[in-house]
Length: 375
Image (tube, rainbow, N blue to C red; front, top):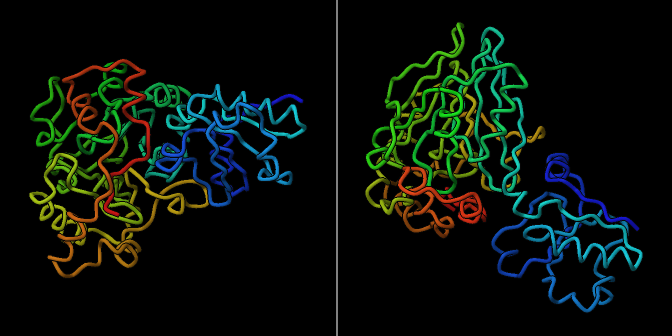
């Protein structure tokens, strides 16, 4: 029997469509517990591949015959070997092409809205890492917000839709993933915008992103309005796009709120976080569609795979927006924090331009789930 490769795009479609899939993950137990492919109707078996070197017969009764089976490992090689062994004993299985390395880097573009005068807003869902980035398009011009280091995806997408990238923004200095902002700006001649309060240590030129900045895209009325909203970082800045969408960066998520400690400043910044969420955001229209820079759990995906909800709905349903007692809020934000992201200090230094790791090192720095939210 031939063993087939399943691509990250194929698996992403199964996640979005809530299809069933049985995953045999042959990485070691610690890696599997830390981070795995998540799907609402996925089942899992984790057996390290070195436990299967003598054969797969002992696990056959644990692998269903009535479901699609996908073998997963870190980089692909081990999963091909185990998939071949299962195929030799008569099982139909696939392996994940490129392994978890590729899963971490895959971006699915999804159109999330129409803009005034015929523009569009696209969300790029990094399904394996929980990162969300955006492209605002109007009259042949495009702006990119919170891009990942997989810059070719944005460049190729813009080319496909016939748009020239003229502006690139980061809502803040990221600590959980490497930004592709500077690289895209260099490749396209676009302006690269960064909040100056997050950029005190950067080693490169940038356009200062400050409260009240208005950036127009195309010759239409599309505008990107910057709203200073510190708390996750001291420079964190949100965007209101076309008076319809609120790009909240890492301040507000669908199911949680941002953590203020990735620069070791949890106690210092918790007051800023509360003010941004409970005062600045309270003054905005409840009809704004919130588009965050991350999602935490697969349940936050809408039916089309996008991550978005109205601000009014979040004020009603998101626990982090409904803590009246300031001490209780402080406690939640400073004491209920998940572990720091993998290599977060090195990621910050890369995003400042202080270090320039090679591609393999960058990939290694980013491996694992995102951890930008309060639990």
